[in-house]
Length: 95
Image 1 (tube, one colour):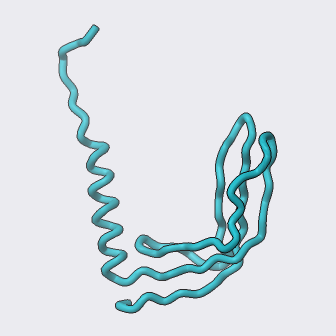
Image 2: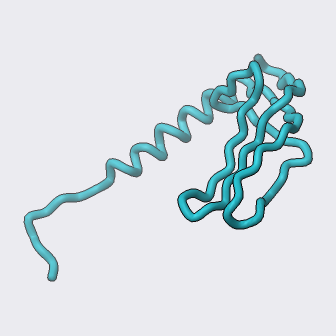
């Protein structure tokens, strides 16, 4: 848990650039990613023509986070979610 371990896995990359959606997803085969882990997709496509959805088969390197990486990712996540709670309500109305 103190040293980082890395390994390669196959993955599926889906990119859609249409009127309804603009997104990219990566799905790793047989691996779960946890807070603090890093994923590097090799030869990743960056775009598709407008109006299309394409699926690519690639390889990805998963670098497992150390216990310190996992702890730091959880602390960062907690701090970021608390920013959402910093919303003030008042009875005063603005025009």
